[in-house]
Image (cartoon, rainbow, N blue to C red; front, side):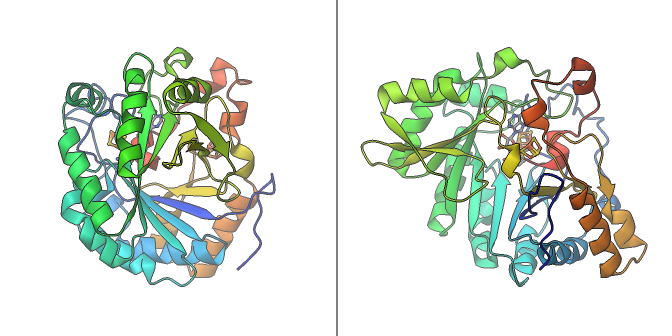
Length: 338
Ligand code: SAM
Ligand code: SF4
Ligand code: SF4
């Protein structure tokens, strides 16, 4: 394994792979139905990386320092035979942890096969327990009940489950306490995510963000909390423990308290473009290399150079940036994954 470092001395440790750009939800903050309508041109199958191609890339990334792999999308469980991909990745020497981010709608069906294939963890996105509000947020596509059934199946299958809730002012801010109460009882870790200005479609405004401080203040009044140390360097969520010893919650505060200095994540989109930041405006086409029969050494060299030249720190810079720069066309969240 090489000791690859980027321009800010950050190692390459995590790889997030988007396996599809399609989704069965139309969350307003990610794939608003007005933009991702019936005529939207999703990627045709031949433009999407095959399982063989993904496996080859993961092996190369592991040789460069990657230890953790996260599968995402779009909705990754829409990709046919996903457990078979997990199995392939699980067999790769050096992969210590495989996780999946999903909206949970198909988890009931696949949880057991995913666990058997070697998946260790699943992050299930759920923004409210209120059926009406959830339906509104996901573009009138899915039910809370289905997601909760998926969560239970995942836990039964032995997967470590975390819940992700994107908090938006005036949309689901009122659900912070009820979500915490529900998942505290179930012993699943809930993580609140500050609403981010990813992509160009969601009409993000700073005023719609509920900050880490506001979230914790609100919770603390009902369930007293104390901050605890991260489990490891570079953990994205700030951890808080309930003082009554009933578990913990996390907050991913990429807007009000960014964490670029420890960011060790690379991302590959469904069509094989390598991005070194969630807010990237351009990436490096690995599919082209894979399909022009470049050997592993050439691909390894290309990825090393990209990482060594990396100096992304978008969230740290967010407040310094001019609107001009912010308006540059960013990659959509559904394309790059979370
Ligand atoms: N479809 C899957 C899901 O929803 O879990 C995986 C892909 S989704 C893009 C990954 C994560 O990004 C989800 O937890 C989602 O809530 C989060 N996300 C999407 N758009 C966001 C935004 N504008 N701000 C904060 N989080 C966002
Ligand atoms: Fe789909 Fe996930 Fe984006 Fe919602 S957040 S539209 S479930 S990809
Ligand atoms: Fe990493 Fe970019 Fe997010 Fe900063 S803004 S933490 S560099 S993905």
